[in-house]
Image (cartoon, rainbow, N blue to C red; front, top):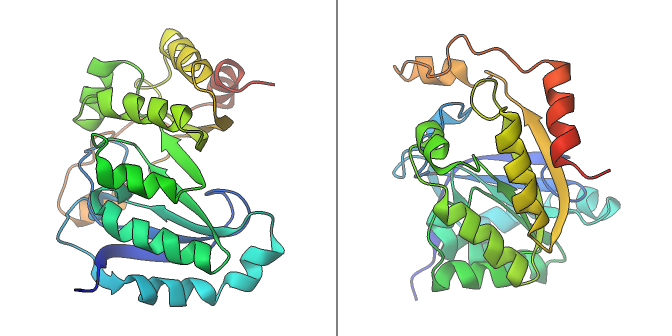
Length: 241
C-alpha cells in the first residue's frame, strides 16, 4: 500500500491557545475559502507546502510530548488552510496520535460537504475548533467567497455525534460585528449540544504583508482592530457567563 502523505505549510511546537493543554500544531496546505482577513494567504494553494508522511509528523510531535503530558489534555492540533481537504491524511495522523497518548484537535471552518472520509476523521477527533465565518449566508459569501451552508451543517453533525466543539468568531469591524447577526450566531450556538467553549477573536492585520509580498491587494485595507468596547459587546452576546 502506498504511504499516505500530506501537504503541510508549517508547524508550531508550543501552542497554548489551539485546544486543550499544550499543543503541537500542524498547518495543512490548501483552502477553499478566500477570507478577506486571512492571515495565512500563502496556505490557499493546494499544490504548495511540503509533503510529509504521517510518521514524519508524529516523530516531530513526539519531541514535544513531555510538554503535552505536563499540561491537561495536551496533544496535536491540525489547522490550515483547511485540514478537511486532506481528511484521509489527518485521519491516519490522528490514529497515530492516539496510539502515542496524545489528544487530537481539528481546527476547521467546516466548509466542505460532509462525506464518509470526513465522518471517519471525526471518529478520531477529540475536539473541533470551529470557526463560524458568518451566520448570514450572503455576508458569508462576501467575506469568504463561499456559502455558510456546509459549516452550519458541519456544526450540527458534530453536535449530533457527541463531538466537543470550541466555537470561534473573528470580530471584524464592518463585517462580523453587527449586533443582530451576533445574536443570531448565539441562537445557533444555543442549538448545539456539545459546545464547550466560545471565543471572540479580535481582527488584526498581521497577515497583511503576506498578501502584499505575494503581489495581492489586501482586501481589508483601512479596517481597524475592534475597540475594547466592541469586543466586550460581542463577548456579552456570544459567551455564556
